[in-house]
Amino acid sequence: MQTNLHGLQRGLSLSGFLFGAVLLVLFSIIGLKMVPAYIENAEIGKIMAAVAADPELQNVGVAEVKGEYVKRASIDDIRAIRADDLEIQQQGGQWSLSAHYTVSIPLLANVSLLLDFNPSSAGH
Image 1 (tube, rainbow, N blue to C red):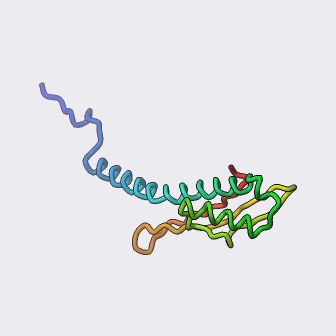
Image 2 (cartoon, rainbow, N blue to C red):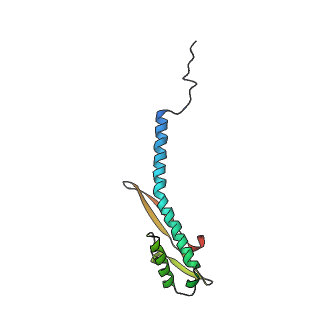
């Protein structure tokens, strides 16, 4: 006696597997293109926190604080923001640095991914 096994078979079809693999590759590529922007944002936040916490900079002007940011950013090869993009305030004898910038990551032809970042010295 022969039974019909097609009704009992379960699993992933070849077309379903290929569709899933293509989606996985696309999301992986997008994720890998985003990683450098997030790493640079973390580095900017660390630099801002280090500049704000530096005891030698507590009694200097805004120009000196910007100069110190430029020195530290050039060491880490930070190019997303310049010293002129920084918002610098002194609150209770402590410097507070922040900025807002956008990174555009080209994906395909005229499609880009736009990332907004708001690093600050208070965030670290």
